[in-house]
Length: 434
Image 1 (cartoon, helix red, strand yellow):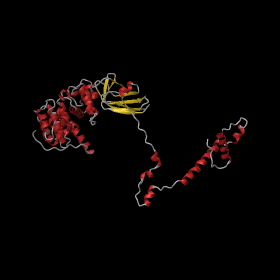
Image 2: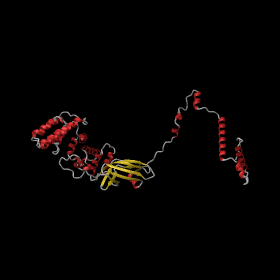
Image 3: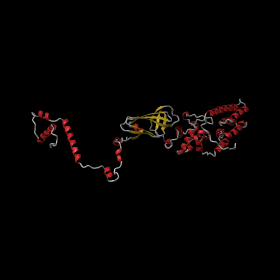
Image 4: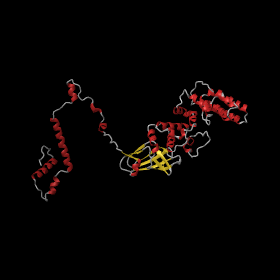
């Protein structure tokens, strides 16, 4: 070892130099002299202080001897040149510059069926057998997972079967749980519509697979319309099994499908979606019933969609009502009187009293004409109804109907007068022909 030089001649430095010299010379100390020698040696703390002092003196000496180099910006300024560095990152806060970006979490992608088979995910399913399902998922693996529940996945609870309509997914860290709300549709009209536990099924839903793929790009379709379309594909239910309106022929559905009855607008939306997705409509039973078209046209909320589905243009709508009244299906011809009253009230106020007073007209049409007068929602119809009741006699069936219609219209007019009208029907040009 080379002995140090240039140090201060303190006792600590001398002791350090003495011990170093002894080490260099290789002098072997006897056991008798060791205790005294150790007492004269410096402690560890003293050695550290000496080392720091030496390093500081060496740094100062090097700084004095080193040539001074001017900063680039200063040199450029003295020579009339632009700053070669510019503003640079000097103004960036030290904490921001030194902060490291957090590492992105890499999720392993898996579907719920595979994950539950491998027992890396625990799935608890609860649904109502129709449109609602909640999936409680827990990640039991040490790996972050992105769990997918695909559209078309079938879920079962006893004899009830539903299918997932829209794909859903959840990102789960290890030991993390999450609840996912699923949109489902019943595959059977015999499903029990009540909250119950469900389980994943290996069964497929081939009949609705193409339709569900189409709905992925049509998020505007309601759950009720999707449900109606699915049952049309799986069971081909007739109109009276899914419609809320009463059947014109007086036959009620006997399939126990009340839980799956929907509004007329949902039926039209379902049929429109089926046709747009490529389904052959000649095989769908509910399209055969002639009542659907006129019911959809009478209902204000479904009328515009029905015109598009049945191809009824704005210019030809009056011809539609005229044709339905004069040449339509015998069981629904009188329905046209209500359509005329709702959408052509000026014509109805002139035409319907004649139909109601004509003794040779079938009683069904006379009754419908009286009831339709109330549907005009016009104050002028109120004295007409009371006059018809007085003419035919208040004790007759037609007279009672006229009085009931007058009372209904009176309440309706009072209600309309006390609140602002929200829905205003578009005015029609005057037509003739009846």
